[in-house]
Image (cartoon, rainbow, N blue to C red; front, side, top):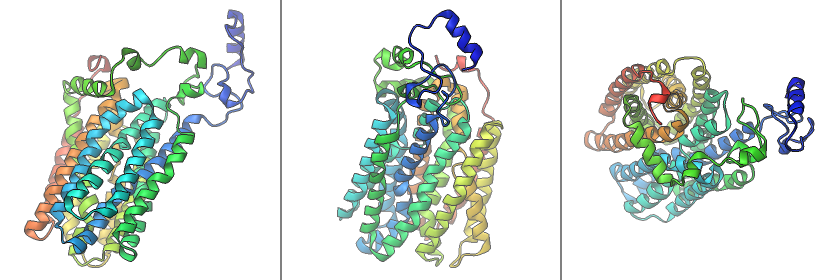
Length: 460
């Protein structure tokens, strides 16, 4: 605090012993953004831990495209059969998100995150015992779907809103890039493991990646700033005693996590902007996780490209995704998020329109250009979408974003199955790529037209 504030507080008479200005960070200090002696706000440590957790949970996001071909060769299962398991995973990945956001508000970020990582590890490890396609529904679909759903992008939104009052766009962009970073780390490793040692070893790699992060989460992740006696980054600290005496509003009401999530959906569904966000993000999911994430490697393989080469290209998407998402977060703090979404979706549509003519048995400069453009755009849509949820729905933005993200995964699940059917029926993916390009145009128009509305008139 400033010395003027100290004199003012002293005149009023302190109600409790005051910590010295050079007190350790754990004491909370007095009122001020960061007590003297603590140079780095603990919000940044929480964000860094959340980033590592997202990386550890991202292993399976890279897996289906790599593991589907080895499973097809060993068991003779069709891509359509395996795509059903991927679809269940994608649906649960999305539909779990709003309830996970409510659980994080009620039981804490650390407990939900640790449980989610254990579910992912269990699902990946148990995959080594599958002998029939329906077993993938339990491992890839149920266990990993619930786990990754609890570690979905709504996790990034919750951490951002809970710990940061400033730099939210940048932080949400960095955390969103965590999934891309995980893809970058895991995808080449999984591809090499599957080719050299078999798909079972690759599955165990995924399980290990998720499980190794759990101790770090338990040790370093904190549920809320008041646990450390601080305010969010960018706002004043409140004394620990005063914060602890005021329980969270939703917890005071005794409202369950499921009821909290469903009430947010009920109220948000009355707002037209919510449906615009839902449609746009459903198309986002269809054209990323559902189509490119699941079917790019099989499609490239159809054109004669080795699987490891295609996996390497998809990993490069992850490299540029990191840059694109962080840049998008930075821009979201400065530019109308509606404009950003319209530009992102339009650029993605143009890229998909040219993709069928770019695929070949070798890596040509043109496909590298596609990879760079698509990588920059991959989840650049997330920071502006989170910002719009916060702008329109206030402090319930993370819960509403959970439902918007659920639509993202519904779109991804539908696209995953339909693309598999298109490939099985026609022998190629061309129709799927063109259809996705058209959907991106729809998303660009809808997103650019999202109306502004005063927060107080939306949710009460």
